[in-house]
Length: 261
Image (cartoon, rainbow, N blue to C red; front, side, top):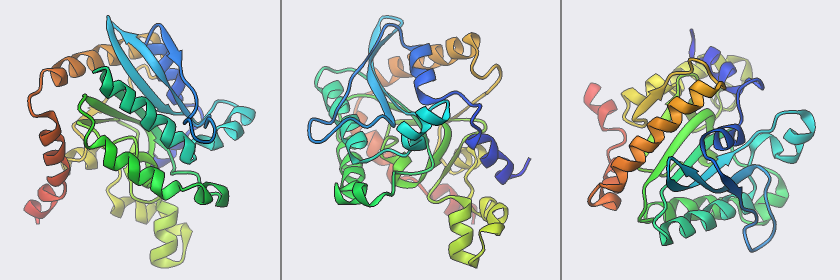
């Protein structure tokens, strides 16, 4: 299967959305709203839930299920208030020593002029800055598309997991092809060069684990994933020098690639 085939699967409207993961793994779960500055962004589904006796702050980018919901959620493209809502909840989690789990599925941050006027770039940058210094475990799971800064704004974490048919890239294959060759029709060629698949990310040290999609969306799938999340959070909660190790993780990016060369 080619890289672009995986991109198509990652974008499929039949895949579970971020809220599906949160509702299926954390019970009970209480959704929280608003950034306390401007509004509530429906593209970010977030709140506090329980996982086998552990209180967890869960934050998901949600694309929606039908046309009405997808329009409401901007097809999973968060606005500045969405990232600020996420950061507000992450800071609260750190204050009360709750671990954080994010579910990422976005082609990128919302690029409307109104979002830019309200500080889209600043909101993303602030998330990156603040997440690197949050003294609580952070686990990010890419469940579909992981596009550009819109994705990494919720993935500056201690661990990154990727579903086997998810992607993680600085730009979409179509955007890359348009810039390099002035031809979006070369997206498949661009996808190969971008090294955006889960296996590419694992080999480059950008992701720590690939999650099997066997039974995707079923109860057994969510139970299995929930058990893995709980075990990982338990381990991270026992880590010493968590912030230094998070910093070192990001500083190590690219080393495996240069070593291979």
